[in-house]
Length: 262
Image (cartoon, rainbow, N blue to C red):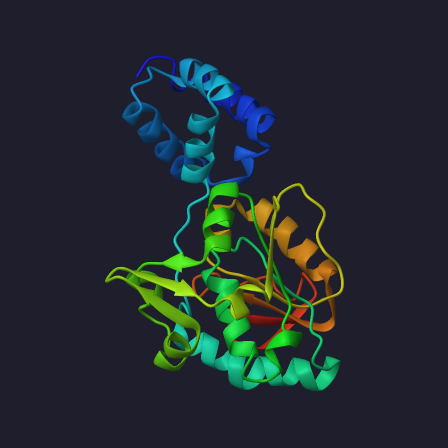
């Protein structure tokens, strides 16, 4: 493909201007391969022509952002960890801070995670007290999250008690989440690499997104999460995202994938 290698640095600068996404923060080989595939698939001969196209075509630009922000999500992903959250972590947080917890689901994708949180939390505090702030960089997935309709694959790990209580089946292939759970979650656009972080959080859930970032970007994000948490607050990460240098960042932990602010 002509122009591909030499122009990648320029392309990254253009993408930052056009979308606010800093490609330098992502693992380069992996991301470049994804982008090259997308450009070929759309029939462009290189970064220059593709940049021109996304700068003038909103739909193409949205497709690009959607493609970059790898959205693989499902309800109750890794059930064992959700069990720990329900039986150990949340009761501890409620005991320490009371029922009005400030919870942030960062990089929430299509909403499966914040809605899972709301359902789990509703077993311990009244549903009308459950408030979850959920963010993602991709406007399209946030729209899907607000609509709240999911395919059977998204629900495959979700315990039946939640399916029965909070979902309505629509035809054979779709499930709609109940309005009472929807009301618990507020969705907003947010870029983890450049936007200000909320403060005073008791629990931050950010799972299966850090694997795409460079080590430097990860450290930066973990430091910001640390600053966002209250003392004694907890960060819940994905099951492939163990934080090796958690002590240097100021965290302690007694349960794998749950890190508390000391």
